[in-house]
Picture 1 (spheres, helix red, strand yellow):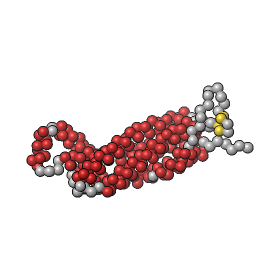
Picture 2 (cartoon, helix red, strand yellow):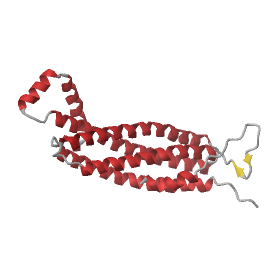
Picture 3 (spheres, one colour):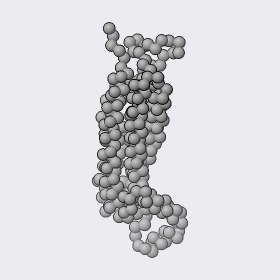
Picture 4 (cartoon, helix red, strand yellow):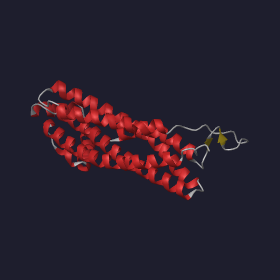
Length: 233
């Protein structure tokens, strides 16, 4: 996963921006086009996506260990899963801003090779964001579906009483139905089957995510090498 990029986060060291009146040279480091700005954006976005990767891994592990026969275990997993999905969404909002800066830099630079590299890595990061977002969407849908499953577990009389006393739940049920239509894995009403289906689908997306991250790792390495300062003579 994006853990492969962790060493690169430390390799992409932001270069101080010189004052407008100064030449584009700071000691032995030469500013090449928009390299320094691009590296700063990568420095900010990569740790965010790595954190999401770790959160997704923890959420998957929680689903894999769930004992659906225990209501307390199920409720704890639901709470943790919802919290994790919210954090992933929040991190993705932060990442999108930095990726947009890379797209802007790609369009602004007059260096064709540099523009191509920035565009390629920004496009790959967009793909990672979309895949992590799909996983967070599944996790959030799982939490809502499992929560409703626990709520309506019990006798038919109890379900009718809840429906009569809490009409707002009808609106929640409608929203849940829409989620189920979007994600087939959420259609299961049994929490155990639901967990299995969602875990399977998330693992499938994680496989695609791994391929996207491997490609991004190569692209980031190319940017790091191309932006390296020239050797002293």
